[in-house]
Length: 203
Image (cartoon, rainbow, N blue to C red; front, side, top):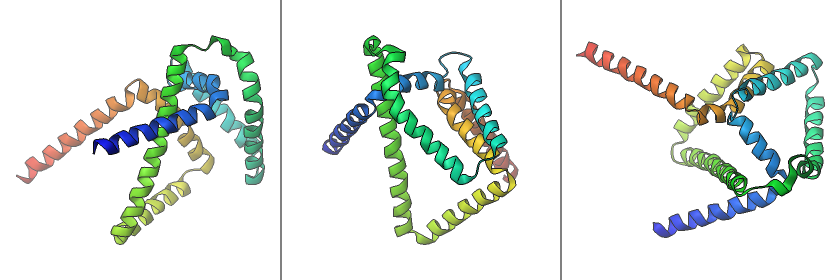
């Protein structure tokens, strides 16, 4: 068991090192983005929501077709991929890179690798469920997709996308400041109270 754990740790360290090497040109931008997403300054959540809202209002106003929207998105990604490695060292100053920044960059890459592993793990569990309990797999997948389809029918697709993107952008900050843990704990306590009340009524 210890050998398997050591192999897993070594493999994760290798993957993290590879990702660090791949994202080397983006390290200053990633660190700046990380500071915004973790709300290191009190006005960062407001700025984040303001920028997201402006972007979605622009999309709503222009109302581009799917093909136009996809083309513009890919074009912006290509421009960023070309310009960021060239401009980032000039803007942020690569000679100012400190040990603390390198440590944080290493942590971010490690978290990205962990997230990738979790997604792969969930996919493997889904495949295992399909093989071992096909009826449960079929029922759970179909019911989940029907629920998502119903929500998509009830809520405007652009507004729904806005809500999802906003939540995902705010999630690291909510997690960092313990807001999710706080409200999850409150919800858990309320559910426990309701369960105890039901048990008392049944008695």
